[in-house]
Image 1: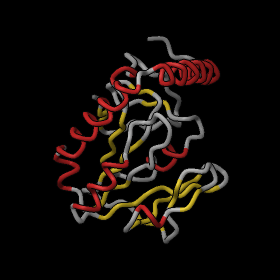
Image 2: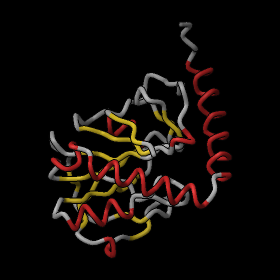
Image 3: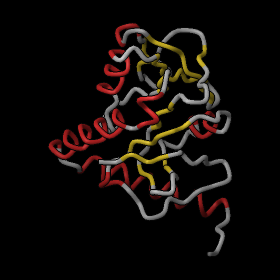
Image 4: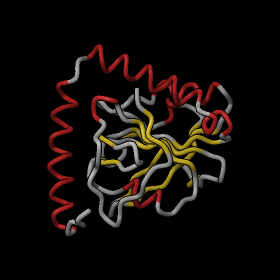
Length: 186
């Protein structure tokens, strides 16, 4: 297979990101609800989730695969829950939360915890957002690289949540992209 230059991969990723945003907007509300329920059910029954002491999750917004039920269940099961805190310059860390009521808007307006950094340990799980993914664990996010930089520093099981309607046979990648351990879909 021919290796593309970084600039062509960036261009392919930008076009795919644009297309997937349009496809996401066109999904029916019924499909979104059914997809969210199926993805949540799969995640909550995964051995990696059930065995995890701590769950590092994203706070879903808009039409992202929903995590609100996952977060509530995590707290109800007595597991530690951590959410990302974004920093200027494309960096982030996770901080633990004991209630979803204690969050404040972050730099992108997404609710974030206030607190000391929490670090995933082997056996924990990180739940990762995506605009689209392939079954090899490659994903396209919103383009800022926060999760790729974070995942590159941890050796923890990671699961990307991606609606089946948004799966791709192949997602273009660059050297800085980090594969997730599993892609969960409806």
